Image 1 (cartoon, one colour):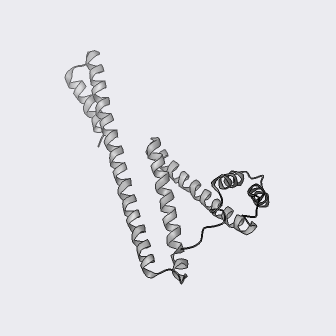
Image 2: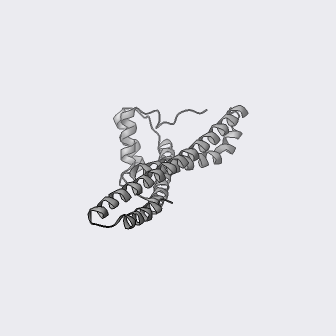
Image 3: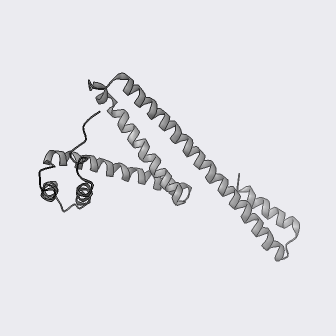
Length: 185
Protein backbone atom coordinates (compact mmCIF):
# COMPACT_ATOMS: atom_id res chain seq x y z
CA UNK A 1 0.00 0.00 0.00
CA UNK A 2 2.66 2.49 0.94
CA UNK A 3 6.38 2.94 0.72
CA UNK A 4 8.61 1.68 3.54
CA UNK A 5 9.75 4.30 6.02
CA UNK A 6 13.31 5.58 5.94
CA UNK A 7 14.02 3.62 9.14
CA UNK A 8 12.61 0.41 7.65
CA UNK A 9 14.87 0.87 4.61
CA UNK A 10 18.00 1.13 6.76
CA UNK A 11 20.42 -1.80 6.72
CA UNK A 12 19.72 -4.21 9.58
CA UNK A 13 22.86 -3.23 11.51
CA UNK A 14 21.96 0.48 11.43
CA UNK A 15 18.31 -0.19 12.31
CA UNK A 16 19.40 -2.25 15.33
CA UNK A 17 21.73 0.56 16.42
CA UNK A 18 18.92 3.09 16.01
CA UNK A 19 16.58 1.00 18.19
CA UNK A 20 19.29 0.53 20.81
CA UNK A 21 19.88 4.29 20.90
CA UNK A 22 16.12 4.93 21.18
CA UNK A 23 16.08 2.89 24.37
CA UNK A 24 18.57 5.31 25.95
CA UNK A 25 16.68 8.37 27.24
CA UNK A 26 19.91 10.34 27.40
CA UNK A 27 20.28 10.25 23.61
CA UNK A 28 18.27 12.77 21.58
CA UNK A 29 16.63 12.07 18.24
CA UNK A 30 18.98 14.55 16.57
CA UNK A 31 21.99 12.65 17.97
CA UNK A 32 20.54 9.40 16.65
CA UNK A 33 20.03 10.86 13.16
CA UNK A 34 23.59 12.24 13.15
CA UNK A 35 25.08 8.94 14.38
CA UNK A 36 23.17 6.80 11.86
CA UNK A 37 23.96 9.09 8.93
CA UNK A 38 27.62 9.32 9.98
CA UNK A 39 27.93 5.54 10.19
CA UNK A 40 26.16 5.12 6.85
CA UNK A 41 28.43 7.71 5.24
CA UNK A 42 25.42 9.37 3.60
CA UNK A 43 22.18 11.03 4.72
CA UNK A 44 19.80 8.05 4.89
CA UNK A 45 17.69 9.37 7.73
CA UNK A 46 15.99 12.73 8.19
CA UNK A 47 14.95 14.29 11.49
CA UNK A 48 11.28 14.08 10.41
CA UNK A 49 11.45 10.37 9.61
CA UNK A 50 13.30 9.78 12.87
CA UNK A 51 10.59 11.63 14.78
CA UNK A 52 7.80 9.63 13.08
CA UNK A 53 9.58 6.38 13.90
CA UNK A 54 10.25 7.46 17.50
CA UNK A 55 6.55 8.24 17.97
CA UNK A 56 5.58 4.86 16.51
CA UNK A 57 8.19 3.19 18.74
CA UNK A 58 6.83 5.02 21.79
CA UNK A 59 3.24 3.95 21.01
CA UNK A 60 4.37 0.33 20.55
CA UNK A 61 6.27 0.39 23.87
CA UNK A 62 3.21 1.82 25.63
CA UNK A 63 0.98 -0.89 24.15
CA UNK A 64 3.44 -3.54 25.28
CA UNK A 65 3.38 -2.07 28.77
CA UNK A 66 -0.42 -2.09 28.78
CA UNK A 67 -0.58 -5.67 27.51
CA UNK A 68 1.91 -6.75 30.18
CA UNK A 69 -0.15 -5.06 32.90
CA UNK A 70 -3.29 -6.84 31.69
CA UNK A 71 -1.48 -10.17 31.59
CA UNK A 72 0.02 -9.58 35.06
CA UNK A 73 -3.42 -8.79 36.48
CA UNK A 74 -4.77 -11.99 34.93
CA UNK A 75 -1.86 -14.03 36.30
CA UNK A 76 -2.30 -12.51 39.77
CA UNK A 77 -5.88 -13.69 39.69
CA UNK A 78 -5.49 -17.09 38.00
CA UNK A 79 -1.94 -18.35 38.49
CA UNK A 80 1.59 -17.83 37.34
CA UNK A 81 2.40 -20.44 34.69
CA UNK A 82 4.85 -18.56 32.45
CA UNK A 83 3.46 -20.06 29.23
CA UNK A 84 0.00 -18.83 30.13
CA UNK A 85 1.45 -15.40 30.92
CA UNK A 86 3.24 -15.20 27.58
CA UNK A 87 0.08 -16.26 25.77
CA UNK A 88 -1.93 -13.58 27.55
CA UNK A 89 0.63 -10.89 26.67
CA UNK A 90 0.63 -11.92 23.00
CA UNK A 91 -3.18 -12.06 22.90
CA UNK A 92 -3.47 -8.59 24.38
CA UNK A 93 -0.89 -7.20 21.95
CA UNK A 94 -2.82 -8.65 19.02
CA UNK A 95 -6.09 -7.29 20.39
CA UNK A 96 -4.60 -3.80 20.79
CA UNK A 97 -3.14 -3.92 17.27
CA UNK A 98 -6.48 -4.97 15.81
CA UNK A 99 -8.34 -2.17 17.56
CA UNK A 100 -5.75 0.34 16.33
CA UNK A 101 -6.13 -0.98 12.81
CA UNK A 102 -9.90 -0.75 13.01
CA UNK A 103 -9.47 2.88 14.06
CA UNK A 104 -7.26 3.44 11.00
CA UNK A 105 -9.78 2.00 8.54
CA UNK A 106 -11.33 5.42 7.90
CA UNK A 107 -7.91 6.75 6.92
CA UNK A 108 -7.27 3.69 4.76
CA UNK A 109 -10.64 4.14 3.04
CA UNK A 110 -9.81 7.73 2.14
CA UNK A 111 -6.68 6.60 0.26
CA UNK A 112 -7.64 6.60 -3.45
CA UNK A 113 -5.14 3.77 -4.07
CA UNK A 114 -7.05 1.42 -1.76
CA UNK A 115 -9.77 -0.66 -3.36
CA UNK A 116 -12.94 -1.66 -1.51
CA UNK A 117 -12.05 -5.34 -1.98
CA UNK A 118 -8.77 -4.78 -0.10
CA UNK A 119 -10.67 -3.22 2.81
CA UNK A 120 -13.24 -6.03 2.82
CA UNK A 121 -10.43 -8.60 2.75
CA UNK A 122 -8.67 -6.82 5.62
CA UNK A 123 -11.85 -6.75 7.71
CA UNK A 124 -12.50 -10.43 7.00
CA UNK A 125 -8.96 -11.36 8.07
CA UNK A 126 -9.27 -9.23 11.21
CA UNK A 127 -12.54 -10.87 12.20
CA UNK A 128 -11.12 -14.35 11.53
CA UNK A 129 -8.05 -13.51 13.56
CA UNK A 130 -10.13 -12.32 16.49
CA UNK A 131 -12.30 -15.43 16.30
CA UNK A 132 -9.22 -17.68 16.29
CA UNK A 133 -7.71 -15.69 19.15
CA UNK A 134 -10.85 -16.19 21.24
CA UNK A 135 -10.89 -19.92 20.41
CA UNK A 136 -7.23 -20.23 21.42
CA UNK A 137 -7.91 -18.48 24.73
CA UNK A 138 -10.83 -20.81 25.42
CA UNK A 139 -8.70 -23.87 24.60
CA UNK A 140 -5.90 -22.61 26.85
CA UNK A 141 -8.36 -22.09 29.70
CA UNK A 142 -9.76 -25.60 29.23
CA UNK A 143 -6.26 -27.12 29.19
CA UNK A 144 -5.27 -25.20 32.30
CA UNK A 145 -8.39 -26.42 34.11
CA UNK A 146 -7.76 -30.00 32.98
CA UNK A 147 -4.19 -29.86 34.29
CA UNK A 148 -5.41 -28.40 37.58
CA UNK A 149 -7.98 -31.19 37.99
CA UNK A 150 -5.41 -33.89 37.19
CA UNK A 151 -3.04 -32.40 39.75
CA UNK A 152 -5.78 -32.46 42.41
CA UNK A 153 -6.61 -36.12 41.65
CA UNK A 154 -2.91 -36.98 41.87
CA UNK A 155 -2.60 -35.04 45.14
CA UNK A 156 -5.63 -36.90 46.51
CA UNK A 157 -3.98 -40.24 45.76
CA UNK A 158 -0.71 -39.18 47.41
CA UNK A 159 -2.58 -37.99 50.50
CA UNK A 160 -4.61 -41.21 50.57
CA UNK A 161 -1.42 -43.33 50.51
CA UNK A 162 0.12 -41.27 53.30
CA UNK A 163 -3.07 -41.43 55.34
CA UNK A 164 -3.24 -45.22 54.90
CA UNK A 165 0.40 -45.62 56.01
CA UNK A 166 -0.40 -43.41 59.02
CA UNK A 167 -3.14 -45.85 60.00
CA UNK A 168 -6.34 -44.00 59.04
CA UNK A 169 -9.28 -46.23 58.22
CA UNK A 170 -10.65 -46.53 54.68
CA UNK A 171 -13.77 -44.40 55.39
CA UNK A 172 -11.67 -41.43 56.57
CA UNK A 173 -9.25 -41.83 53.66
CA UNK A 174 -12.15 -41.91 51.21
CA UNK A 175 -13.61 -38.77 52.85
CA UNK A 176 -10.28 -36.92 52.51
CA UNK A 177 -9.88 -38.08 48.89
CA UNK A 178 -13.39 -36.86 48.00
CA UNK A 179 -12.75 -33.47 49.66
CA UNK A 180 -9.55 -32.97 47.66
CA UNK A 181 -11.11 -34.14 44.39
CA UNK A 182 -14.15 -32.00 45.21
CA UNK A 183 -11.93 -28.96 44.74
CA UNK A 184 -11.97 -29.86 41.02
CA UNK A 185 -15.54 -28.72 40.62
